Image (cartoon, rainbow, N blue to C red; front, side):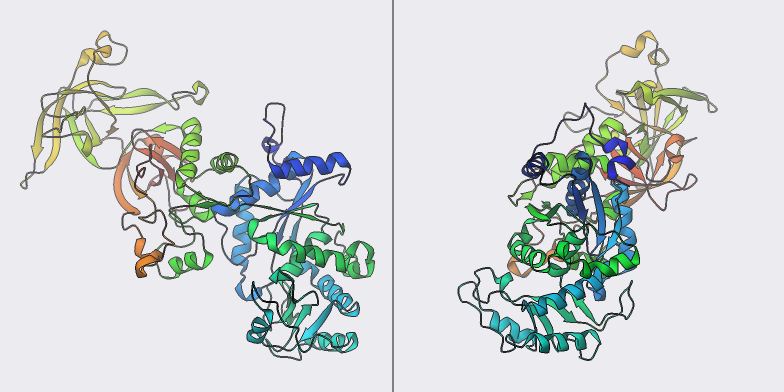
Length: 585
């Protein structure tokens, strides 16, 4: 199923501005020239870890371009390195793609084509374009040369096609131990592009594969498998990040030398299994990666954070994984907005995390319902109300969207307010509550603080105040001017909630900077996760898991994906109302 067909909201319409970037310009030119009648793309992650924010750009680009031009996009799992791959990652990848709002035309695996890759390798051997090499990995590196010096031919480079074919078939039969031999392309050891200096196409690995079991003791290398997978699937535009630009000549070499379109015998295994085959000459196009400061994106480093217990798993809301930021309260529309704002270019750059956070704020400001919550509660007793006083005040769910409706918020004699909204000795410019002064209680009227009750240690534990009965909503005195407005939650009706206050995981903008002997773990922010008990209005407690809100005056919060329950609410802070880190880099 195509992305646009399964997600009509993502398909272009007359009101959607046409996106302009160099990749889309190439696609338009290829369609206009007749080079391609239809567009086919693919998103090809390796299932060796969880997808992170950087992958969101590739997902939006691969699937988005297919949808915009009426084509389709495959999800292909590049499962050619089984030692590092896991079905858990496969499930997470599929979940992430769907969460972002996309669906794939076809779910493929590189392992679907193992027999094709093998037959293609035999063809290369017979053509004299590949040979079996006995050099060790260290010797291969020594023979490769450097950026300023050409490499040297392997002493096994001139083996006959017959000998190479025999050795390769014995590799396939599992006769040799890991690392004993490789199959290498025969290209040019003097090439200025080191990727063309007789690169490996196959290596021996006696490792169980999640899909093929122990059938294969040899596995194809990434560049070889990736290029032929694109060709098999009829991919028209192979979109890759810039680090693959130097690999493009090898990509084209593999596609051209194997020539699947004119080698039907190589794809017979697909035909026998009923798998579709749409051979094409893909066009590889590179674009810049998505890199943000205040983060680490290395899978190795993220794995270390998980395994060392410094975070609570891959979906910890402080992690830059898509599973993590989803649990943090990021929305698919916010990520797509961020990708649109960043744009597509050929220039690698380090972006400020405020771009990502700003996209979330803008998305949630426009769409998130409003609720009231108190995360550092201080009790306020309105002494001029009856002890049994109860009423429901009507609040709009969203101040800019009448269609969002309204709700009743219970109001009573005893309330919770934020502790920081009271100051016994107010600092200059303080506009909230202090003894003898007034503030507006959001939606309820104007109150005056009459007394602060303290415990034996001198800490304020309760406030007593009075509500001006002439200042209730709709009354003439409601418009009387006071300096500040504070929010509240009824102490009688408020629901205790676990509030997880998440912040940036690192204290510096460049945690990957290893200067001075420090590593990224030395820059972990000890205040990146705080857990407090607060109170939320009943309508917030009834939220569905993953439902996001603006808690008025506090920030944007989301009901936890797993732990939240109506009778035991758990909310994660997604982002503050304003950037509190500006100027700290």
